[in-house]
Amino acid sequence: MTRTVYVNGVYMPEDKATVSIFDRGFLFADGVYEVTSVLDGKLIDFEGHALRLGRSLSELDMQSPIEMEDLLKVHRELVKTNSIEEGLIYLQITRGVASDRDFVYPSKDTPPTIVLFTQNKPGLADSPLAKVGIKVISISDQRWGRRDIKTVQLLYPSMGKMMAKAAGCDDAWMVENGTVTEGTSNNAYIVKGGKIVTRHLSNEILHGITRSAVLRFAREAQMEVEERAFTIKEAQDADEAFFTSASAFVMPVVEVDGRSIGIGTPGPVATRLREIYLEESRKVAV
Image 1: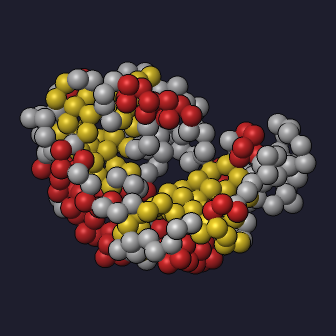
Image 2: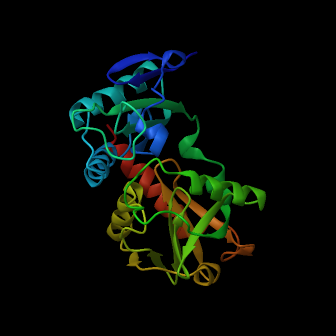
């Protein structure tokens, strides 16, 4: 069945959807995005994603083409129309279509481009990988300096995924000045002596919505959290490791650069945090 997508205020079949070749998202990666998970036909952490979207747009001096209330309605309509029980909704907003290719921003009255589509992912919450854990490699972080803005400039993270695949692994953790920044599409964590360690918020990493929720749940569960940078060696010597993202929730990491973490299986902290996150997020899903 052809998906229904949303383009600039219109719902349409995906094979009818088009965007101009002069759109600045295509020409300059001049756009931002969000991905919201759907569980049981409801949106997970929608408000957090909408608020971060607003921040990303503001940081790029880009106007929003839609109010939050209407954005929620669009999300719900796409979930309903495409019969999504478990899956994802991808949202992208660009600076819009300029009259020609030019590095200078177009005038303020240029309408932004907004696109949303769904991805059906049955079994998203019950991922087999969460039961066995994933393997990661370390790579040099060669992205731009404003990683806190969720832009569509994702070429290097994509290259990182391919480097990991070529090495027979699942993902890559990026390293800058000797410490881990984050994964290619996720925030990174280690656990040592029961303490959860993850990099502090700054322009160097994305301010993950799932990260925020997981750390809140961890503290409510009386788990100790330390927000600081850590090295690959610390990760290899840790008792556990994991990452968080909107599409993977809490995912155990069992190997870093060929070395097993702990006993090489998902640890109790990551396993429990995944359970808590899924349980609590479902309660407040919209």
